[in-house]
Image (cartoon, rainbow, N blue to C red; front, side, top):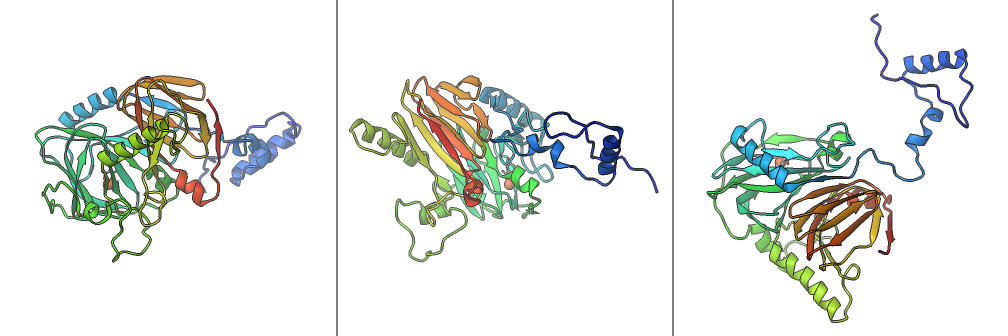
Length: 369
Ligand code: GTQ
Ligand code: FE2
């Protein structure tokens, strides 16, 4: 038998509830290591803190930096079978270099050169795209071409075939959000390549999914069943913008509707359930009046915010940043978040809240600003 090094290493600790550090105790701990055992009494503080102490850290990524590196990738890195996507993920500084913005969420900038195709595939991971600038790419979801333009929020729920093609003479970059880390940690990833040929290069203004599903409050009578993910392929900016503007106008006229004074917010929803767009991902758009500030809020679960328009300050715990169009901030679980608008400030937000709500493990704490 060859000797193997145990991955378990136990330190004798001191403090209340800890045993005397005798030679016999060291001997006991070596016995634990050999049998791959870890006693709770050396771990309790880290494993069961009185409130969440996530390894992930708050962090800001500047859009200008991401875009510069994505453009350079566009010159150096092909997009095609194998790599599949020219997507560059945000790596949270607390997560050991893994390509995870938070423990559950992937956030990446994806880049396509003029006339380029990203090949068709499907996977169990749920995905969305959010467009902070540009246009000219169609994402084809189960054969339905969906135009991508500034402010649009687009869905690729799990196990739908999808590829992207840029029909313009200009490159395009956008934000991808997926539950890749969650699926990885839980060992639930399945992946399949699609046909090598792009099936449909047509460029309709509206997808078939939108024509069927994206009329406010109107549902096709032929489709009475609840669907796991929203059938709306694209939530268009004109609707999101109007909903936010109307909330603030109603507030100014003395009517209810805003999330809090000077802060409008809408959640992208699944019209077949009224719930979140996908089982693992919540997505919202927020608008703060110029000079306004949000309450300080913390919640179980992690989120990523992207500035869509305007400037302001984002504070997460002890850290604070000036933010500008496209900048991204990772907010770990239970970290207090406050947003202050300089100009009118529009922000896109996505989170893993549906996971915690489904498990009845959700908690929120709001302190007035
Ligand atoms: O566009 O299909 O950022 O499959 C990561 C995985 C994008 C995509 C990502 C993906 C995609
Ligand atoms: Fe994909």
